[in-house]
Amino acid sequence: MKIAFLQVRKNSCTDGAESLCWGMHRAGHGCSVIGSDIGGIPEIIMDTENGFLVPETDPESLSEWIVQIFSDKGIMEKFRMNKFIHIRESFSWEKISNNFSNVFD
Image 1: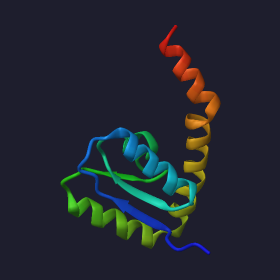
Image 2 (image 1 turned 180 degrees about the horizontal axis):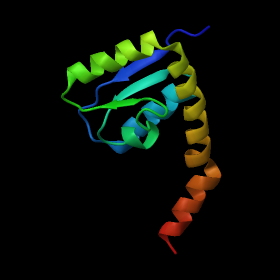
Image 3 (image 1 turned 30 degrees about the vertical axis):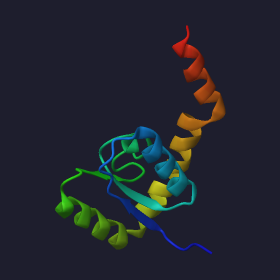
């Protein structure tokens, strides 16, 4: 049973790790995601490809994107598919280990 299909995250913290974990967790559950364009959130949310990014201090943009998601069910499916692809390609253990080893090369 799916409880939520949209989660909005206004993050005033620039801690990339917390934001990254939040975005991956929501995306992994198939939620449409709207997040602030700060911290690690833009590493997960590719604006208009797999979610929406809004300026941290712009509630009007936030409300417009919320209405858009509820108005266009096709966009939710597009985001869901693109999120899984982005996470698989960018955050697999193979990709992470390669990026980590490149730090020492």
